[in-house]
Length: 583
Image (cartoon, rainbow, N blue to C red; front, side, top):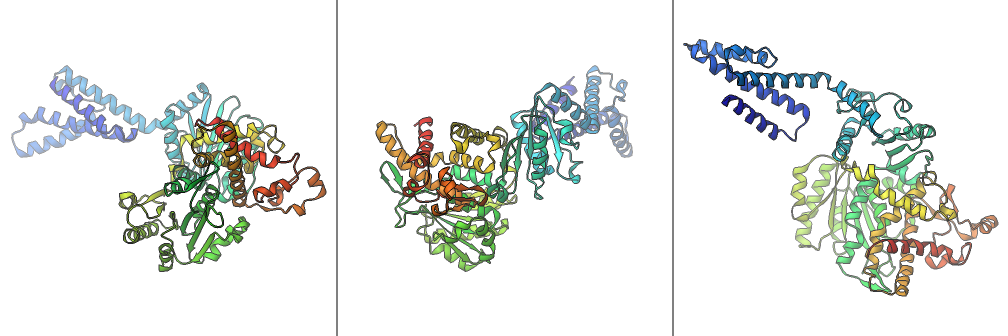
């Protein structure tokens, strides 16, 4: 009995040590524990019969051979003549059989369990992507719903044999997506733009299977500059860059950084002492999106002589060539005096000099070349520069792009809060953003609030990604409006309305920058046709031109159903934020 108790205590200890490991690893290591426990059990039982060293060695070999037999219901229990030892052998044999069954038939049982769950439960997840990305997404779903039925759809043939502990589905969508269920498909990043084709296929299927919910990753430029519509899907389109940068800006908004440095309140609205100043080293896909998102996020007025709320310098080798695609997509960038482009290699003295000469005004520096090692080296070099020339908290915030797992180097820079890191990995695969879609739900509610407006009269799924993203941008901007207005609790209704009108001017400026960063340009009022004026049309969506991209005071001269209506749209946006947000 003592031996059985010692065995069970050891088994419990092994199970506790391995509690966070995978099921497969736990099973095999526990079988190893059983094997190593049985060998000395046999050995010390038979040792008294051995008289020479050779016999002892021979016995050890025989025990190592005998142990597997004892683990598979072939133990010689008469040798021990003890019910407790018999029970021990039975436990060991059952566990070994379970492990072998788990190893050789787990896929079958997992698939059977999932098929059963699909029948019994209304909600079904289908994760399509590369094996590594899909594994991360499946873990995230499991962390929130352990019993959720999940299918894996490989993006390429090489991943068909991947073992993700969920059934692999290779049939066409129509074969396993059925009406009457809550089908949620997650299309993870695909470098070959295959998700666009999958979205079209699913949109066709959505006519026969209503309510198909699809969350799809797309190329960031496609998502930003193309207007797509999938009216028969409940589609949420995202990009890695957008999710990563949006989360960062929600945690570290430019306005919050400026407020820490001072400013003043004018007509009830905060006005920074100067613009938010951003430096970018390395013009990669990530830094392009970071530049545009920050520009949108810093579209407020400041006390600068020209009133600008944002300025930036961008340094990279062959910068004219690298920025050319960006200028084609965002024509408004060409004439922006608050953007300075520096032709200098990221690791060059010229790039460092650009930082040094702006140290007094820079708020933030993004280092985002495509090379993680170079990014960390540059960040380390700049942190030394800050220690020498602007010690304490006066130095700019360093934001470093990390594309690989380099935790040791990151920890060195993170010490003393010298670096903030953008981890460009599966960290963007979060349940709250991709499954619950909290931001998207708020944006759809905002769209419904404008249901009576002819500009926003269509169903959410039918309005296209341009207007959907425009609504999302309003939701994302709520923290800025709250920071600008401060505490309104003690103000009279008339005072609150006055603040709303001041913020409406900001909202119009923010909206203008949003249009610019999505490729829109001004449509001069003089070019509007008589029919457009008669119908109060102010935009030409096909050419991405809009007559409302003018200063606030010039809106009154544009065609509108009644005087002041265009300004009132901005006021209504602001009022909705404060009347529904607790102060």
